[in-house]
Image (cartoon, rainbow, N blue to C red; front, side, top):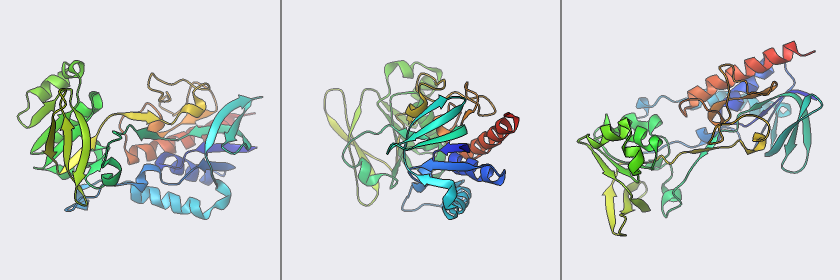
Length: 301
């Protein structure tokens, strides 16, 4: 029986694991990989790296430490988590079950993708999924944001403060009626392509232009120094969907101490309903979850 099992090896999970180890807990991190989305980062031909606030250096320190501690990690997918007789059962992909007194879910979220030609080829090479992380790199440049909801509008609004021009591809009529939508409609450096879809991504080493299709089926090329797919996130929370409360989108609901509604189950990072999908935010949330779990275990009989 473990004191604590942490599910997920991204920034939140790695940080939680190292903090739990230093609290002398019998802890195991279970994940398919280590590093999560920090394994991917945007590359540009003229990238000025000093403009980026990176959390990957911090995460890599924790990853190297955990790679050294073989006993504290298991590289496998978790299928399901349940509560049995006052403790938790963590069922792995190949059928093994692990018992633990407490659990931290730090499985992150995955981006919704366009599934068009060129997307995979140019991922992280001029095309990415996080304007909030990279907007400062696009001062006086041409950018494209793809998405039909509030996330896309927010990305476009942030880019519009620095970019020469922003094209928004695919926003719905309803989202354009929001205060942010109305603000963007009045911006001189924003072009809104309502009802348009993306056909393909083109480039030469790096993404250079986006081919879009209007509602009548006519295609147009849009030159872009940077393209951001902001179609939303899908939380990796299926393993606990019948165990803890989630919001309408499936993000795990936590309080300020990263506690779920079920005592003994904690969650941290992008799988939760916190604000901002950022590495350093996830690192801090991982710390909080580990400290909260430690406090919970101290109080157990």
